[in-house]
Image (cartoon, rainbow, N blue to C red; front, side):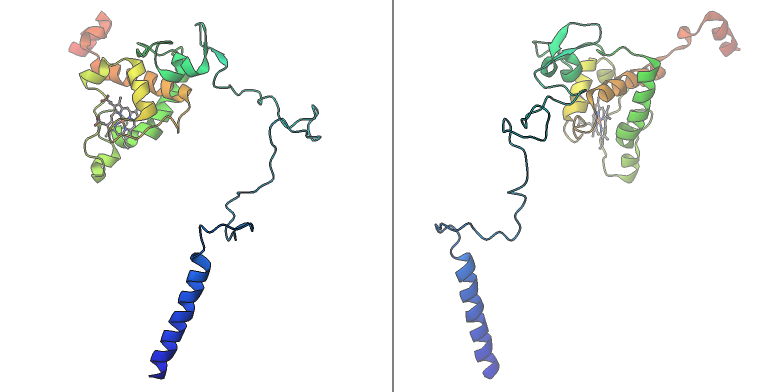
Length: 218
Ligand code: HEC
């Protein structure tokens, strides 16, 4: 009996405490609320346009660090005109001022770009699409991602580079977006390498010089 009474009393006291603390949430008060975890609501920081003796020009607003591009800032595309970065094919995969995908890679395809693409492809794409791009990556063996596209499908072979860029950037159904993980240049490098992979599967004997064809036929 004593136990029951003390349990009831403790329960009542706890209840009163909970109502006392939580029950007044939403109530108006001139006091700042109790912050158990302040979540960095208040922190030391510089406000734009405020005087700040720390910097040589005396204000907290500084020019952007070198090598960075403001989103609206014009950007020189390789051997093309100057576009605002936001609307440059290299960043969107689309023809500037339209929603049409660009046909081909806006970056010059060099050995260096292909090598970079090879490396990035093996890191970011091979787990699902396989190192050959045939859709037989490790995720298929493990059974965690059954329906992975075969990148040698005719449909993807004839797809514009811009649309593939769009797929890498934003993802497609069960494929996640890789835009946040890979800089635009790397996405184009992967596309260049993917084209080389596709070509490697499309070659025929007729592509060989005649003397090599002969050797092969022997
Ligand atoms: C986590 C697994 C996974 C990874 C990693 C992945 N993909 Fe995919 N990808 C898929 C799946 C699944 C599909 C099929 C989506 C669908 O249902 O159309 C697909 C589809 C595609 C397609 C065809 C899109 C279309 O229009 O049908 C392309 C092109 C592609 N991936 C390229 C890439 C490239 C390039 C990378 C590396 C940057 C990559 N994927 C990384 C899972 C992945």
